[in-house]
Length: 255
Length: 147
Image 1 (cartoon, chains in turn purple, green):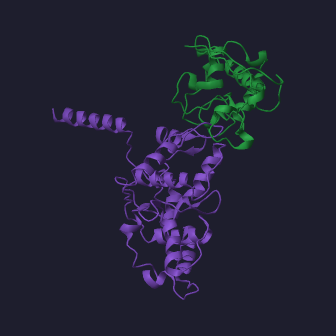
Image 2 (tube, chains in turn cyan, brown):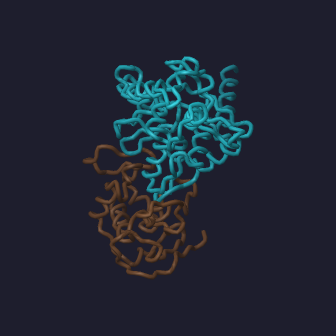
Image 3 (tube, one colour):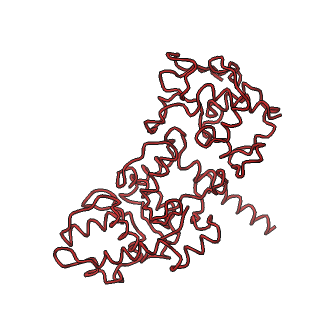
């Protein structure tokens, strides 16, 4: 009897999950072969750590006014709170829109250090983002999309489910419907963002999330949006939030 | 199912490049099939076999298992196509290659001969059908041989 109760509870949960379109988030780490998992886990083997080190240097590099990020946040960023890092993107009442972690770093440079803003995905910003997010390694992603972030989340989800390019596929086709299936020699994962910025094995360097999105658009023979565009920021809001609960792994190793 | 007629032909039937909006050939669905070969073209099975392997063309192996043992990795997204020529007619296969979404609107499978005007944000050099009409016929002719 108990067995049947368990079974029906499981079936109900399964039905609910299907109806809501909700899938248990699984990190791309779970889809990696063991040798790449080991590479990610070992800070001396993980090539992404070069970017973390570069980010730490920039974090400590004084600007024209003699201050650096480290002036407020500590030489190793020890004043940064992992729980706050895990909340990005957050809503900014001042900008009346979502602010990504990378954008927040640039705003901080501009407002507190009187620096000129950099172009989105400038290598210095990506390195700083990698360093800062690495500070929160292991912290569960926790993006709040209940309030003013809701429309951006919805818009991101709409794009995630929109067929794009000559190949007429949406992100959701590969990374939701067919997670776990083989695309020729590639195992399809859930396209989770918890390991970004990641070291990519194909390009042998660090990749921000927006750069990866551009590569995905190119694969589908679609016109990409620009890094830092509204579209990619909305996608980041949606994709980060759909991975709520996954531990931050920056810098991850991904194909 | 309602019959569907593509836009009117306005350029060469034998265009070597994939069709853009101007030289897109019409096709008609009857009884879940496209009975007439596109442009009345004749397919070549050997060429079709090359196209299903080619990553920049059919790339059918990305998703389907096929009886092509010399290729190492076959996808597991779509159904295996071994024996598909015994299960489906040439007309039924043609509809699936031209536009599987006519049968399953939610499918992941791209329409290999879709009118380029309905694409969303295609790269400028990819604002065409994926395959030419001739290549569609080549692939269909190859699939028919998989008995």
